[in-house]
Length: 524
Image (tube, one colour):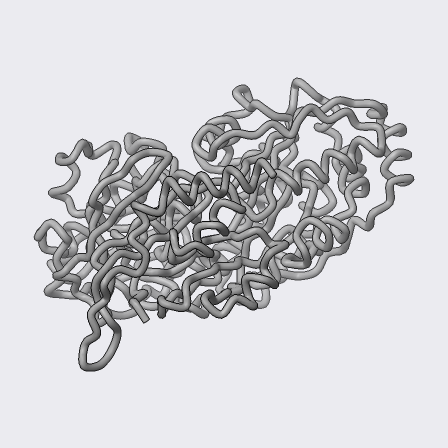
Protein backbone atom coordinates (compact mmCIF):
# COMPACT_ATOMS: atom_id res chain seq x y z
CA UNK A 1 0.00 0.00 0.00
CA UNK A 2 2.82 2.43 0.89
CA UNK A 3 4.49 1.82 -2.49
CA UNK A 4 1.22 2.44 -4.36
CA UNK A 5 0.62 5.69 -2.48
CA UNK A 6 4.16 6.85 -3.22
CA UNK A 7 3.81 5.96 -6.90
CA UNK A 8 0.50 7.87 -7.07
CA UNK A 9 2.08 10.95 -5.50
CA UNK A 10 5.00 10.79 -7.89
CA UNK A 11 2.59 10.67 -10.82
CA UNK A 12 0.69 13.71 -9.52
CA UNK A 13 3.94 15.60 -9.01
CA UNK A 14 5.40 14.81 -12.42
CA UNK A 15 2.40 14.91 -14.73
CA UNK A 16 2.71 18.64 -15.29
CA UNK A 17 6.36 18.41 -16.24
CA UNK A 18 6.11 15.31 -18.35
CA UNK A 19 4.65 16.89 -21.53
CA UNK A 20 3.79 13.46 -22.89
CA UNK A 21 4.31 13.05 -26.61
CA UNK A 22 4.07 16.72 -27.41
CA UNK A 23 2.56 18.15 -30.56
CA UNK A 24 4.47 16.14 -33.12
CA UNK A 25 3.85 17.56 -36.56
CA UNK A 26 3.90 15.05 -39.41
CA UNK A 27 6.10 15.60 -42.41
CA UNK A 28 5.18 14.37 -45.85
CA UNK A 29 7.38 11.33 -45.28
CA UNK A 30 9.72 9.95 -42.65
CA UNK A 31 9.52 10.51 -38.91
CA UNK A 32 7.39 13.12 -37.19
CA UNK A 33 8.96 16.00 -35.30
CA UNK A 34 8.35 18.22 -32.31
CA UNK A 35 7.29 17.95 -28.71
CA UNK A 36 9.02 16.48 -25.68
CA UNK A 37 10.09 12.91 -24.94
CA UNK A 38 10.23 12.07 -21.24
CA UNK A 39 12.44 9.15 -20.19
CA UNK A 40 12.39 7.85 -16.60
CA UNK A 41 15.55 6.19 -15.28
CA UNK A 42 16.39 4.86 -11.84
CA UNK A 43 19.56 6.75 -10.91
CA UNK A 44 20.87 10.28 -10.80
CA UNK A 45 24.14 10.38 -12.80
CA UNK A 46 27.09 11.01 -10.54
CA UNK A 47 28.77 13.02 -13.32
CA UNK A 48 28.15 14.09 -16.91
CA UNK A 49 31.86 14.41 -17.66
CA UNK A 50 32.61 11.85 -20.39
CA UNK A 51 36.12 11.13 -19.07
CA UNK A 52 34.79 10.20 -15.62
CA UNK A 53 32.02 7.81 -16.70
CA UNK A 54 31.59 4.67 -14.62
CA UNK A 55 27.86 3.96 -15.07
CA UNK A 56 26.17 2.77 -18.25
CA UNK A 57 22.89 4.61 -17.67
CA UNK A 58 24.74 7.87 -17.01
CA UNK A 59 26.88 7.28 -20.09
CA UNK A 60 23.77 6.86 -22.22
CA UNK A 61 22.60 10.32 -21.16
CA UNK A 62 26.02 11.75 -22.05
CA UNK A 63 25.91 9.92 -25.41
CA UNK A 64 22.93 12.07 -26.38
CA UNK A 65 25.26 15.09 -26.45
CA UNK A 66 28.73 13.80 -27.30
CA UNK A 67 30.21 11.37 -29.81
CA UNK A 68 33.34 9.28 -30.25
CA UNK A 69 35.63 8.47 -33.13
CA UNK A 70 33.94 5.06 -33.35
CA UNK A 71 30.66 3.67 -32.08
CA UNK A 72 28.87 0.34 -31.68
CA UNK A 73 25.88 -0.53 -33.82
CA UNK A 74 22.84 -2.39 -32.51
CA UNK A 75 24.62 -5.71 -33.08
CA UNK A 76 27.74 -4.69 -31.16
CA UNK A 77 29.92 -4.20 -34.25
CA UNK A 78 32.33 -1.26 -34.39
CA UNK A 79 31.45 1.50 -36.88
CA UNK A 80 32.96 4.92 -37.68
CA UNK A 81 31.29 7.88 -36.00
CA UNK A 82 33.48 11.01 -36.02
CA UNK A 83 36.08 9.00 -37.89
CA UNK A 84 35.27 8.72 -41.59
CA UNK A 85 36.49 5.12 -41.91
CA UNK A 86 38.22 2.36 -40.01
CA UNK A 87 41.88 3.13 -39.27
CA UNK A 88 44.94 1.77 -40.96
CA UNK A 89 47.37 -0.04 -38.66
CA UNK A 90 51.14 -0.40 -38.78
CA UNK A 91 52.64 -3.86 -39.18
CA UNK A 92 53.79 -3.89 -35.55
CA UNK A 93 50.25 -3.12 -34.32
CA UNK A 94 51.38 0.03 -32.51
CA UNK A 95 50.34 2.90 -34.79
CA UNK A 96 46.77 3.68 -35.89
CA UNK A 97 46.07 6.30 -38.54
CA UNK A 98 42.48 7.50 -38.22
CA UNK A 99 40.76 9.51 -41.00
CA UNK A 100 38.27 12.06 -39.66
CA UNK A 101 35.01 13.47 -40.97
CA UNK A 102 35.11 16.97 -42.39
CA UNK A 103 32.46 19.67 -42.12
CA UNK A 104 31.38 18.59 -38.63
CA UNK A 105 30.85 21.21 -35.92
CA UNK A 106 30.32 20.97 -32.19
CA UNK A 107 26.97 22.25 -30.95
CA UNK A 108 28.65 25.53 -29.88
CA UNK A 109 29.81 26.11 -33.47
CA UNK A 110 33.45 25.12 -32.91
CA UNK A 111 34.80 23.07 -35.86
CA UNK A 112 35.62 19.43 -35.23
CA UNK A 113 39.11 18.53 -36.45
CA UNK A 114 42.15 16.47 -35.53
CA UNK A 115 43.29 19.03 -32.96
CA UNK A 116 39.96 18.68 -31.12
CA UNK A 117 40.13 14.89 -31.31
CA UNK A 118 43.66 14.94 -29.92
CA UNK A 119 42.59 17.26 -27.10
CA UNK A 120 39.76 14.89 -26.19
CA UNK A 121 41.97 11.82 -25.91
CA UNK A 122 44.75 13.75 -24.18
CA UNK A 123 42.26 14.98 -21.59
CA UNK A 124 41.12 11.41 -20.90
CA UNK A 125 44.73 10.32 -20.37
CA UNK A 126 45.67 13.34 -18.23
CA UNK A 127 45.77 12.35 -14.52
CA UNK A 128 44.83 15.95 -13.67
CA UNK A 129 41.37 15.36 -15.16
CA UNK A 130 38.95 14.84 -12.28
CA UNK A 131 38.19 11.15 -11.72
CA UNK A 132 39.20 10.29 -15.27
CA UNK A 133 38.69 6.63 -16.25
CA UNK A 134 40.99 5.82 -19.20
CA UNK A 135 40.87 2.08 -18.41
CA UNK A 136 42.25 0.04 -21.29
CA UNK A 137 42.90 3.25 -23.24
CA UNK A 138 45.83 3.93 -20.95
CA UNK A 139 47.63 1.79 -23.55
CA UNK A 140 47.84 4.98 -25.67
CA UNK A 141 51.35 6.45 -25.77
CA UNK A 142 50.95 9.53 -27.98
CA UNK A 143 48.21 11.23 -29.99
CA UNK A 144 49.20 13.43 -32.93
CA UNK A 145 47.10 15.67 -35.17
CA UNK A 146 48.89 14.85 -38.42
CA UNK A 147 46.71 17.34 -40.30
CA UNK A 148 43.19 18.72 -39.83
CA UNK A 149 41.52 15.49 -40.93
CA UNK A 150 44.00 12.84 -39.78
CA UNK A 151 44.75 11.60 -36.28
CA UNK A 152 47.69 9.32 -35.50
CA UNK A 153 47.63 7.28 -32.30
CA UNK A 154 50.65 5.34 -31.11
CA UNK A 155 50.28 2.63 -28.46
CA UNK A 156 52.72 1.56 -25.77
CA UNK A 157 52.10 -2.08 -26.67
CA UNK A 158 49.81 -3.91 -29.12
CA UNK A 159 46.18 -4.02 -28.01
CA UNK A 160 43.93 -6.15 -30.21
CA UNK A 161 40.54 -4.54 -29.39
CA UNK A 162 41.85 -0.95 -29.51
CA UNK A 163 39.38 0.38 -32.08
CA UNK A 164 36.46 -1.18 -30.20
CA UNK A 165 37.78 0.45 -27.02
CA UNK A 166 37.46 3.86 -28.70
CA UNK A 167 33.66 3.38 -28.72
CA UNK A 168 33.48 3.98 -24.96
CA UNK A 169 31.80 7.16 -23.73
CA UNK A 170 35.02 7.97 -21.88
CA UNK A 171 36.68 8.52 -25.28
CA UNK A 172 34.10 11.11 -26.38
CA UNK A 173 35.37 14.29 -28.00
CA UNK A 174 34.36 17.59 -26.38
CA UNK A 175 34.47 21.05 -27.90
CA UNK A 176 37.79 22.57 -26.77
CA UNK A 177 36.05 25.94 -26.47
CA UNK A 178 33.55 24.51 -23.97
CA UNK A 179 36.12 23.69 -21.31
CA UNK A 180 36.15 27.19 -19.84
CA UNK A 181 32.42 28.10 -19.96
CA UNK A 182 29.20 27.10 -18.13
CA UNK A 183 31.10 26.14 -14.98
CA UNK A 184 33.43 23.80 -16.87
CA UNK A 185 37.17 23.62 -16.37
CA UNK A 186 39.73 21.57 -18.30
CA UNK A 187 39.90 19.32 -15.22
CA UNK A 188 36.14 18.88 -14.66
CA UNK A 189 33.22 19.18 -17.05
CA UNK A 190 29.69 19.70 -15.77
CA UNK A 191 28.04 20.65 -19.07
CA UNK A 192 29.27 18.43 -21.91
CA UNK A 193 29.36 20.09 -25.34
CA UNK A 194 29.86 17.68 -28.20
CA UNK A 195 28.76 16.93 -31.75
CA UNK A 196 25.74 14.85 -30.73
CA UNK A 197 22.08 15.25 -31.68
CA UNK A 198 21.12 16.92 -28.39
CA UNK A 199 22.39 19.87 -26.36
CA UNK A 200 22.28 20.33 -22.59
CA UNK A 201 19.48 22.66 -21.47
CA UNK A 202 19.37 22.33 -17.68
CA UNK A 203 19.84 19.93 -14.81
CA UNK A 204 18.29 19.70 -11.37
CA UNK A 205 20.19 17.12 -9.35
CA UNK A 206 17.97 14.29 -8.20
CA UNK A 207 15.11 15.41 -10.44
CA UNK A 208 15.86 15.74 -14.15
CA UNK A 209 18.23 16.50 -17.01
CA UNK A 210 16.76 18.35 -19.99
CA UNK A 211 18.25 18.48 -23.49
CA UNK A 212 17.18 20.30 -26.65
CA UNK A 213 17.64 19.17 -30.23
CA UNK A 214 20.85 20.17 -32.01
CA UNK A 215 19.25 21.69 -35.10
CA UNK A 216 22.61 21.71 -36.89
CA UNK A 217 23.42 18.07 -36.19
CA UNK A 218 25.73 16.76 -38.90
CA UNK A 219 24.43 13.17 -39.19
CA UNK A 220 22.04 11.83 -41.81
CA UNK A 221 19.57 10.97 -39.03
CA UNK A 222 18.27 14.03 -37.22
CA UNK A 223 16.83 14.47 -33.71
CA UNK A 224 13.04 14.40 -33.95
CA UNK A 225 11.91 15.60 -30.53
CA UNK A 226 12.51 19.25 -29.71
CA UNK A 227 13.31 18.29 -26.14
CA UNK A 228 14.19 15.15 -24.24
CA UNK A 229 13.81 15.12 -20.46
CA UNK A 230 15.51 12.46 -18.37
CA UNK A 231 13.55 12.08 -15.13
CA UNK A 232 15.24 10.58 -12.07
CA UNK A 233 12.79 8.09 -10.51
CA UNK A 234 14.57 5.50 -8.33
CA UNK A 235 11.43 3.54 -7.41
CA UNK A 236 10.48 0.83 -9.96
CA UNK A 237 6.70 0.97 -9.28
CA UNK A 238 6.79 4.75 -9.64
CA UNK A 239 8.40 4.45 -13.08
CA UNK A 240 5.71 1.95 -14.03
CA UNK A 241 2.99 4.29 -12.80
CA UNK A 242 4.43 7.06 -14.95
CA UNK A 243 4.48 5.02 -18.17
CA UNK A 244 0.95 3.75 -17.56
CA UNK A 245 -0.40 7.23 -16.85
CA UNK A 246 1.36 8.96 -19.72
CA UNK A 247 3.62 10.84 -17.35
CA UNK A 248 6.62 9.30 -19.10
CA UNK A 249 7.10 8.07 -22.65
CA UNK A 250 9.96 5.64 -21.95
CA UNK A 251 11.06 3.88 -18.78
CA UNK A 252 14.12 1.76 -18.13
CA UNK A 253 14.02 -1.29 -15.83
CA UNK A 254 10.33 -1.65 -14.93
CA UNK A 255 9.22 -4.00 -12.14
CA UNK A 256 10.05 -7.40 -13.57
CA UNK A 257 7.00 -9.03 -12.02
CA UNK A 258 4.78 -6.73 -14.11
CA UNK A 259 6.39 -7.37 -17.50
CA UNK A 260 3.57 -9.74 -18.59
CA UNK A 261 0.87 -7.16 -17.89
CA UNK A 262 2.94 -4.37 -19.45
CA UNK A 263 3.42 -6.52 -22.55
CA UNK A 264 -0.34 -7.09 -22.84
CA UNK A 265 -1.12 -3.36 -22.61
CA UNK A 266 -1.88 -2.18 -26.18
CA UNK A 267 -0.85 1.37 -25.31
CA UNK A 268 2.70 0.23 -24.50
CA UNK A 269 5.58 -1.63 -26.11
CA UNK A 270 8.12 -3.76 -24.24
CA UNK A 271 11.64 -4.20 -25.57
CA UNK A 272 13.55 -7.03 -23.90
CA UNK A 273 16.99 -5.97 -25.01
CA UNK A 274 20.14 -8.03 -24.72
CA UNK A 275 22.67 -7.16 -22.06
CA UNK A 276 26.30 -8.04 -21.42
CA UNK A 277 25.95 -7.05 -17.76
CA UNK A 278 26.90 -9.48 -15.03
CA UNK A 279 25.51 -8.95 -11.54
CA UNK A 280 27.50 -10.05 -8.54
CA UNK A 281 28.22 -9.58 -4.87
CA UNK A 282 31.74 -8.18 -4.93
CA UNK A 283 33.87 -9.37 -2.03
CA UNK A 284 36.60 -7.27 -0.45
CA UNK A 285 39.47 -9.73 -0.91
CA UNK A 286 41.92 -7.67 1.19
CA UNK A 287 39.42 -6.88 3.93
CA UNK A 288 41.03 -5.99 7.25
CA UNK A 289 37.66 -5.56 9.00
CA UNK A 290 36.77 -9.15 8.09
CA UNK A 291 40.09 -10.86 7.22
CA UNK A 292 38.38 -14.23 6.75
CA UNK A 293 37.27 -12.92 3.36
CA UNK A 294 40.91 -12.94 2.30
CA UNK A 295 40.68 -16.76 2.12
CA UNK A 296 39.59 -18.16 -1.28
CA UNK A 297 37.94 -21.16 0.41
CA UNK A 298 35.70 -18.82 2.42
CA UNK A 299 34.70 -16.95 -0.73
CA UNK A 300 34.00 -20.26 -2.47
CA UNK A 301 31.80 -21.31 0.46
CA UNK A 302 29.77 -18.11 0.10
CA UNK A 303 29.16 -19.01 -3.54
CA UNK A 304 27.89 -22.46 -2.58
CA UNK A 305 25.62 -20.87 0.04
CA UNK A 306 23.57 -18.81 -2.43
CA UNK A 307 20.87 -20.37 -4.61
CA UNK A 308 21.34 -18.37 -7.80
CA UNK A 309 18.74 -20.36 -9.76
CA UNK A 310 16.05 -19.52 -7.23
CA UNK A 311 17.04 -15.84 -7.25
CA UNK A 312 16.72 -15.79 -11.06
CA UNK A 313 13.36 -17.59 -10.89
CA UNK A 314 11.71 -15.89 -7.91
CA UNK A 315 13.37 -12.48 -7.62
CA UNK A 316 14.29 -11.77 -11.25
CA UNK A 317 11.13 -13.53 -12.57
CA UNK A 318 13.23 -15.42 -15.10
CA UNK A 319 14.75 -12.30 -16.67
CA UNK A 320 18.35 -13.40 -16.18
CA UNK A 321 20.71 -16.34 -16.74
CA UNK A 322 22.90 -17.73 -13.98
CA UNK A 323 26.61 -17.35 -14.61
CA UNK A 324 28.90 -20.21 -15.56
CA UNK A 325 31.90 -17.91 -16.05
CA UNK A 326 32.98 -14.52 -14.71
CA UNK A 327 31.49 -12.83 -17.80
CA UNK A 328 28.51 -12.85 -20.14
CA UNK A 329 28.27 -15.35 -22.99
CA UNK A 330 28.06 -12.43 -25.43
CA UNK A 331 31.72 -11.46 -25.02
CA UNK A 332 34.59 -12.55 -27.22
CA UNK A 333 36.78 -14.74 -25.00
CA UNK A 334 33.91 -16.34 -23.06
CA UNK A 335 34.11 -20.01 -22.13
CA UNK A 336 32.09 -21.99 -19.61
CA UNK A 337 34.21 -22.75 -16.56
CA UNK A 338 31.74 -24.45 -14.19
CA UNK A 339 29.13 -23.73 -11.56
CA UNK A 340 28.86 -23.20 -7.84
CA UNK A 341 25.83 -25.41 -7.32
CA UNK A 342 23.62 -24.52 -4.36
CA UNK A 343 24.95 -26.67 -1.53
CA UNK A 344 24.41 -25.13 1.93
CA UNK A 345 25.80 -28.22 3.69
CA UNK A 346 29.04 -27.93 1.76
CA UNK A 347 29.14 -24.19 2.45
CA UNK A 348 28.79 -24.79 6.20
CA UNK A 349 31.52 -27.45 6.16
CA UNK A 350 33.90 -25.18 4.22
CA UNK A 351 33.24 -22.24 6.53
CA UNK A 352 33.84 -24.41 9.58
CA UNK A 353 37.07 -25.82 8.14
CA UNK A 354 38.28 -22.29 7.43
CA UNK A 355 37.44 -21.06 10.93
CA UNK A 356 34.72 -18.83 9.51
CA UNK A 357 31.59 -20.26 11.14
CA UNK A 358 29.48 -17.42 12.50
CA UNK A 359 31.50 -14.71 10.78
CA UNK A 360 29.97 -11.24 10.36
CA UNK A 361 29.96 -9.22 7.12
CA UNK A 362 28.61 -5.82 6.17
CA UNK A 363 26.69 -5.78 2.86
CA UNK A 364 25.83 -2.79 0.68
CA UNK A 365 23.42 -2.49 -2.25
CA UNK A 366 22.02 0.27 -4.45
CA UNK A 367 18.30 0.84 -4.90
CA UNK A 368 16.98 1.62 -8.39
CA UNK A 369 20.22 1.05 -10.28
CA UNK A 370 19.49 -2.51 -11.46
CA UNK A 371 16.23 -4.47 -11.75
CA UNK A 372 15.30 -5.80 -8.31
CA UNK A 373 18.73 -4.79 -6.92
CA UNK A 374 17.90 -4.35 -3.24
CA UNK A 375 15.62 -7.42 -3.33
CA UNK A 376 18.43 -9.54 -4.78
CA UNK A 377 20.80 -8.29 -2.09
CA UNK A 378 18.24 -9.15 0.58
CA UNK A 379 17.87 -12.67 -0.86
CA UNK A 380 21.65 -13.16 -0.80
CA UNK A 381 21.76 -11.98 2.81
CA UNK A 382 19.07 -14.51 3.70
CA UNK A 383 20.96 -17.39 2.10
CA UNK A 384 24.17 -16.40 3.88
CA UNK A 385 22.28 -16.20 7.16
CA UNK A 386 21.08 -19.78 6.59
CA UNK A 387 24.69 -21.06 6.63
CA UNK A 388 25.55 -19.15 9.80
CA UNK A 389 26.92 -15.89 8.40
CA UNK A 390 25.71 -12.76 10.20
CA UNK A 391 24.96 -10.11 7.57
CA UNK A 392 24.72 -6.47 8.56
CA UNK A 393 22.49 -4.87 5.94
CA UNK A 394 22.10 -4.63 3.06
CA UNK A 395 22.60 -0.93 3.58
CA UNK A 396 21.46 1.22 0.66
CA UNK A 397 21.59 4.82 -0.57
CA UNK A 398 21.13 6.91 -3.70
CA UNK A 399 23.47 6.06 -6.57
CA UNK A 400 26.05 8.88 -6.29
CA UNK A 401 26.38 8.26 -2.54
CA UNK A 402 26.65 4.51 -3.10
CA UNK A 403 29.44 4.98 -5.64
CA UNK A 404 31.20 7.13 -3.09
CA UNK A 405 31.17 4.14 -0.73
CA UNK A 406 32.36 1.46 -3.17
CA UNK A 407 34.52 3.11 -5.86
CA UNK A 408 37.24 3.86 -3.33
CA UNK A 409 40.70 2.57 -2.37
CA UNK A 410 40.78 -0.39 0.04
CA UNK A 411 41.42 1.70 3.13
CA UNK A 412 38.18 3.63 2.49
CA UNK A 413 35.91 0.66 1.73
CA UNK A 414 32.57 0.99 3.52
CA UNK A 415 31.45 -2.63 3.04
CA UNK A 416 32.87 -6.13 3.28
CA UNK A 417 30.71 -7.06 0.28
CA UNK A 418 28.65 -4.99 -2.10
CA UNK A 419 26.14 -5.64 -4.88
CA UNK A 420 27.26 -4.27 -8.23
CA UNK A 421 26.85 -4.87 -11.94
CA UNK A 422 29.41 -4.64 -14.70
CA UNK A 423 28.52 -4.11 -18.36
CA UNK A 424 31.54 -4.07 -20.68
CA UNK A 425 31.45 -1.04 -22.96
CA UNK A 426 32.35 -3.26 -25.91
CA UNK A 427 31.92 -7.00 -26.38
CA UNK A 428 35.38 -8.26 -25.55
CA UNK A 429 36.72 -10.08 -22.49
CA UNK A 430 39.38 -7.39 -22.12
CA UNK A 431 36.63 -5.15 -20.76
CA UNK A 432 35.32 -7.72 -18.29
CA UNK A 433 38.82 -8.35 -16.99
CA UNK A 434 39.05 -4.69 -16.02
CA UNK A 435 37.32 -6.06 -12.91
CA UNK A 436 40.19 -8.44 -12.10
CA UNK A 437 43.28 -6.36 -12.78
CA UNK A 438 45.19 -4.94 -9.78
CA UNK A 439 46.21 -1.89 -11.82
CA UNK A 440 42.51 -0.97 -11.95
CA UNK A 441 42.02 -0.80 -8.18
CA UNK A 442 40.52 2.61 -7.28
CA UNK A 443 41.37 5.38 -7.81
CA UNK A 444 42.99 4.02 -11.00
CA UNK A 445 39.88 2.09 -12.04
CA UNK A 446 36.78 0.29 -10.79
CA UNK A 447 38.20 -3.01 -9.53
CA UNK A 448 36.46 -2.90 -6.17
CA UNK A 449 37.18 -6.47 -5.05
CA UNK A 450 40.86 -5.41 -4.87
CA UNK A 451 41.64 -8.84 -6.32
CA UNK A 452 45.16 -9.62 -7.54
CA UNK A 453 46.45 -12.86 -9.00
CA UNK A 454 49.70 -12.69 -11.04
CA UNK A 455 48.62 -15.63 -13.20
CA UNK A 456 45.43 -13.83 -14.23
CA UNK A 457 47.27 -10.56 -14.80
CA UNK A 458 49.83 -12.28 -17.02
CA UNK A 459 47.19 -14.11 -19.08
CA UNK A 460 45.08 -10.99 -19.58
CA UNK A 461 48.12 -8.95 -20.59
CA UNK A 462 49.12 -11.59 -23.14
CA UNK A 463 45.59 -11.86 -24.52
CA UNK A 464 45.28 -8.11 -25.03
CA UNK A 465 48.36 -8.05 -27.25
CA UNK A 466 47.75 -11.37 -29.02
CA UNK A 467 47.09 -11.22 -32.76
CA UNK A 468 45.96 -14.85 -33.06
CA UNK A 469 42.28 -14.84 -32.10
CA UNK A 470 42.21 -18.47 -30.99
CA UNK A 471 45.16 -17.89 -28.68
CA UNK A 472 43.37 -14.86 -27.26
CA UNK A 473 40.30 -16.99 -26.54
CA UNK A 474 42.40 -19.68 -24.88
CA UNK A 475 44.21 -17.18 -22.66
CA UNK A 476 40.97 -15.54 -21.56
CA UNK A 477 39.51 -18.99 -20.85
CA UNK A 478 42.46 -19.90 -18.65
CA UNK A 479 42.17 -16.59 -16.83
CA UNK A 480 38.43 -17.15 -16.32
CA UNK A 481 39.04 -20.55 -14.72
CA UNK A 482 41.50 -19.00 -12.25
CA UNK A 483 39.14 -16.14 -11.36
CA UNK A 484 36.27 -18.60 -10.87
CA UNK A 485 38.36 -20.66 -8.48
CA UNK A 486 39.60 -17.61 -6.56
CA UNK A 487 36.00 -16.37 -6.23
CA UNK A 488 36.46 -12.62 -5.68
CA UNK A 489 32.72 -12.39 -6.34
CA UNK A 490 29.60 -14.28 -5.45
CA UNK A 491 28.80 -14.93 -9.12
CA UNK A 492 25.09 -14.35 -9.72
CA UNK A 493 23.63 -13.79 -13.19
CA UNK A 494 23.62 -12.05 -16.56
CA UNK A 495 20.49 -9.93 -16.68
CA UNK A 496 18.20 -8.94 -19.53
CA UNK A 497 17.48 -5.26 -20.17
CA UNK A 498 13.77 -4.43 -20.37
CA UNK A 499 12.64 -1.07 -21.73
CA UNK A 500 8.99 -0.01 -21.83
CA UNK A 501 7.77 2.79 -24.07
CA UNK A 502 4.55 4.33 -25.27
CA UNK A 503 3.00 3.06 -28.49
CA UNK A 504 2.88 6.75 -29.45
CA UNK A 505 6.67 6.70 -29.81
CA UNK A 506 8.76 5.00 -32.49
CA UNK A 507 12.45 4.19 -32.99
CA UNK A 508 13.32 3.44 -29.37
CA UNK A 509 16.24 1.01 -29.40
CA UNK A 510 19.08 -0.48 -27.40
CA UNK A 511 22.67 -1.56 -27.71
CA UNK A 512 24.03 -4.92 -26.49
CA UNK A 513 26.25 -3.14 -23.96
CA UNK A 514 23.05 -2.28 -22.06
CA UNK A 515 22.43 1.23 -23.28
CA UNK A 516 18.97 2.42 -24.27
CA UNK A 517 18.78 4.58 -27.39
CA UNK A 518 16.31 7.42 -27.80
CA UNK A 519 18.55 9.75 -29.82
CA UNK A 520 16.41 9.43 -32.93
CA UNK A 521 13.09 8.42 -31.39
CA UNK A 522 10.11 10.23 -32.84
CA UNK A 523 6.39 10.72 -32.27
CA UNK A 524 4.49 7.88 -33.95
